[in-house]
View: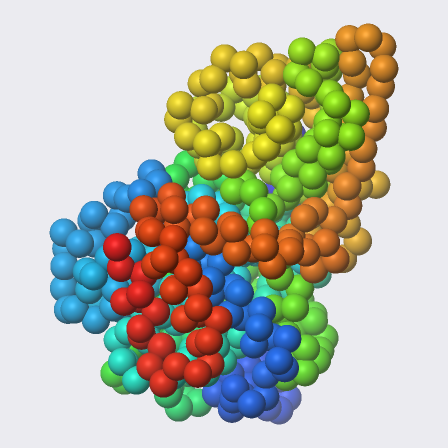
Length: 485
């Protein structure tokens, strides 16, 4: 059975409120100062390069996901509601209020489950920062490429620091949080406030407004619901709105992290580490730990995909040869991707498929690949895949958990009908900084997404060029114009 949050903190007893600081403001003020004072020149060259890749990857995933269930309906709803013409819905020339554009584009970016991942906290940082950043860039009109890169890098870094600092050593999914959404409220606020030139007091107030809205749970993952795709959009919308409200004079709470009813108390039982929040602030950036996805499914499933594709290819194994397969995972991945087995074998939605290790392993065995075509309502009814997935079992192995957090290893045990047995363990999936995608693979992923969106190769190549020369652009708003189909 699933492990409730009460296993980690007594749910019948309120956590002890933190003692008020004897001196100094809440830590959110130091984070606001860091965000407002950091400039492009303070960013390491590696972080600049990775941030541009994050922008390209997020834009590609969003364009490819524009017509996916959930994203399509939100886009049509937003267009129908209309409003002030400020920022583009990606892939179109349609302008809507900036916060609405951030919401739509973030949901599009998460729809394929192809967006990058900060593995230590199981969070998708780019899809909660870049839609907000580009929406505000469109709204303001005069944001330079350097300013866009800076705001994005800081939003990613601060979101990941906040996630790392809360309940260190405890998997957020096991407790029940959806970190992408939960920390997206803060990340998008930092990004919007930075680009809008908020003062320190305005930024802190905006973060207080965002905190009052912050939410994000993982029930949608378990139910296979489309709302899983919407959390990033809700957060991106809220961050842009929070910055705008603060600029208009609306006041938010100030002691939002360490106050008696602050974030760490309300959401994490007052379990947090200031070391994880501030260590290396300004010198190390979370962007260097971000993983890019080679397959459109939950990042936690990618060690299973890697293991399957490698094992089957090396041993020339075909689906008819297989008697049974057992997938072993650590506790976090087991609960998210393997359990209950009946649900992971009997899919009722595309979201179910994106979060099923048995499904992705079956696709790898039958088709020798895992791609867009495996995550459709038609695919999840394919008789050959359904027959194969029934031969796949799952089991928990705590030794496969990754020390320090993030997706653990996957072990596959394969038994063939001729009596042979094979095993394969993968600890770091393709796309991880320790096992990166090649530049050719990365560009091809972008082109696959833009082709899915209906963009010509010439337009996609031009868009890639614009993103890779972003630091030279005096006005970064040309990016959304370059996306229009």
